[in-house]
Image (cartoon, rainbow, N blue to C red; front, side, top):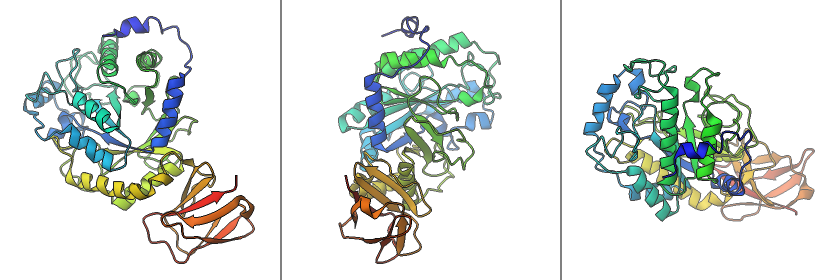
Length: 426
């Protein structure tokens, strides 16, 4: 194993981040993929009230740890998970390797509080998932929490203050070393990792030194193409490779988590399929397939990926409704995926009627909400070779107006997403 300390000693003096050629190529591929599935799964699923139950209910960390003795997800099937994700049209999975409760969902030699050593299941679900992702051609991203409500050496922040740990000061050098040991395991024992998705920076005061540059340098040293993102709700820090937005499309901040400026980096928005991230038995408020497709399309129209979350059940199975939504999204993407995959946001900014995506000289108009059978777009007629419905290539007539052209539709669109293909002159 490559020790994190030996790697860091050669990198501490590094003052600026220059991404490698492999990393830049990975960024482009990430932008092409457009759709990923987030999986929040851990001991908290057994309590069936979400991933924040430990701090919300002030559960003692020693008592909480006893949950592991009964954690036996007998229905966990990595092949089925990856197959369900693949049929949805998603291109990558991001799974919680260690959430804020501190339980590691992989076989770590740096803590016994993990799924192999602390549970009767004794299986490394991350290794099984990594192997299956490789077999089925799905990329694997890893969520990793910067905070820990169970470890005594973790410095207390704004959350996890009632879990019974004895020392609010913790022991930062010890905890930081632990995190980097684990990150080294994750990046040397589970094959190619597409991205590390950090969370928890927001738990400390802004002047707290997380020593991120050294940690980021470690990751880029171990796997240069591995992308780094951090859910800190600020514009990206030095060393980060993509920017994420929690429950919001870039630049909108309707949920109040993502008011930061939109950067030039690849973008990703994460959203729940129902109301919670982790499994909650009382939460059956699943978004409709139409809502989910609209969110995916709107994200693409803002040049962002959608990372859509599912909270697997404590028995290891995906909720039936979630699997149904994945299947239905996949059926839609089997027809319309070409208008999203590999595209960037189009030359037409998002409009009340929908958004545009673009691939070379193909401009795709995604009509999501149109109350008329005509549509005006700010593209000159002299730039347009032809306009047609994407699904059947039937022609759409258009005529110049003062600001571009007006498209004449035969009727008001009723589809989930009426996609028109505009072929521009080159």
